[in-house]
Image 1: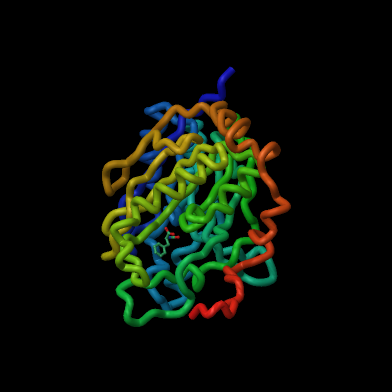
Image 2: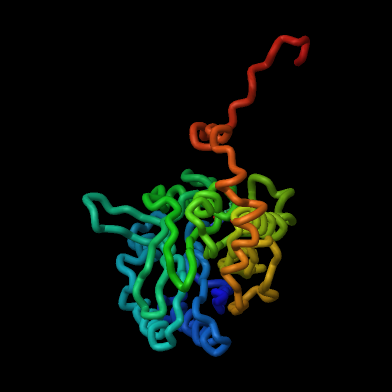
Amino acid sequence: MTRKLDVGCAQLGPISRSDSRAEVVARLIALLEEGKERGCQLVVFPELALTTFFPRWWLDDQDEIDGFYERQMPSPETQPLFDRARELEVGFCIGYAELDESGPETRRFNTSILVGPDGRIIGKYRKVHLPGHSDQREDWDFQHLEKHYFDASDTGFPVWRAFGGILGMAICNDRRWPETYRVMGLQGVELVMIGYNTPIADPEVPHHDHLQSFHNHIVMQAGAYQNGTFVIAAAKCGQEEGSTMLGQSVIVAPTGEIVAQATSMGDELITARIDLDICADIKNYMFNFEMHRQPQHYGLIVERRGAVPPPLVDQGQG
Ligand code: ING
């Protein structure tokens, strides 16, 4: 019996700073309902899917800042999404800014959760790779302050048995790092669900702006193929508060092939019937980790954070 799963990737267009949770939740529910109509059992939403991408600004008003976070999930404002998902019996993955007051200190995370068709939370992931900077860059049109607004992850990259397979989550910049996929690959992951908010303009390397879509896809196609897993990646995109955000959401097969791709810069659902059993075609042969990996030579990957080139040897070289 093949393990076919009908999945949806729900790309979101811009969310304005002034959009209420209710307005956004209505858009999410519309995409979930379309997913149901098209036979989806699981729908993946973007990173920070409830608000505008607020790390683009240096904000001083703590109340305004806190307004971008969820203190509980589901919250009263997001409960309608969970209720509708349960009615439709469609699971979903969604990213949001999490304000965690459960411990002695308040902690803040860029978080993603997996919710089952019964509306119950199956698992939570907190973003590991926080890109950008923590200081204000006065001369930049937009900041990238995830290191300022979010704490480091305390979850790492877990996976869960759900929807007939082994599923994991990653968030935006995580998708650029091979370690993200490999840590889940070493747990047998068959579907990695990713949300992203990617500004086209990178002030530090503006001459790469035209490569954003290429880089977006190459890293996920490679991660999928090298670990024999499907990848579903949902963008929040379009002109959001003056910042042009990358779209081109995709569903990628374990072969690295793109199965479906969004063609708009707005709210758009792309779908696919994926067969989780084809992961074995990669996991059992080309990337049979048990048969081919040589961890005794990989130590630097864990031991070393930054690159350390070999010492300059005096061979008359400059
Ligand atoms: N967004 C971007 C990403 O990795 C980024 C971060 C930083 C993009 C600098 C471009 C330039 O896709 C998030 N949210 O990680």
